[in-house]
Length: 288
Image (cartoon, rainbow, N blue to C red; front, top):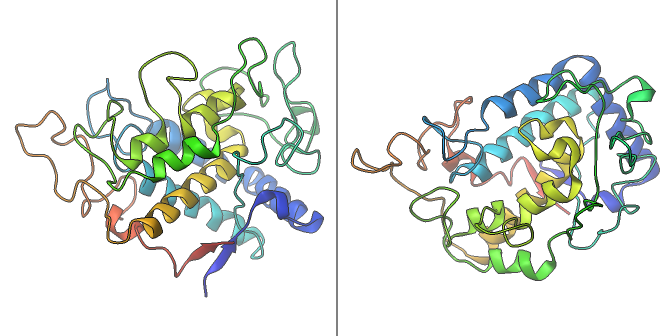
């Protein structure tokens, strides 16, 4: 029977506590840092050679869907009642609303060094030391809204604009795509600040701190953000019945993307799973 992922703002006090405690236990066991290492390892950009799976590629959505399922599995091995909630950043848009409460993910970082000092993931609590990162800082950092150069979270209108595109992805299958759901949702674009960062990417910029780089998994908000992105793919599939993951076939030897992206029936490293197999997960979970 499929389990349910719910809006983080609707969780009861007990559900919040169980979610937090499961995250802390997965961290204590050493499993959480494995997720951080994996995301760093598969964060390959357009400018790098080799296969791209996690970002700047069609497999952005199915790769993170599987990534979420792995984390969710780890949480449910601790507490079978726990699922990954989603953060609707088109509605909960302030620095004090869910998920930034004391009993959930804690709040903003302090002005001096952006260190998070409230909530269960604050370094001072002793349960959330960052061991895998792109800096030598051991504490969680955030800069919600980017105080020195403010940006806003994406709006419902901006999100709906991405979902309105009836095509999943288009050539050249990278960060320069101007059409297709995948890049409109992932959010790569030329320009500066608000113009350059859309939807998924702008949320990472808005949160700031460790969410800015490949080690963004170090902030637990990564999961509730990506659960919301995953929900949007589900919504898009319902809106555009019959629309499929693209490309269906791998680019040929004459293409610059040959061997650099994953086609519908090709395996997505590091798993033995294809985008096709990730298109329908209705038997595993659903969204409330």
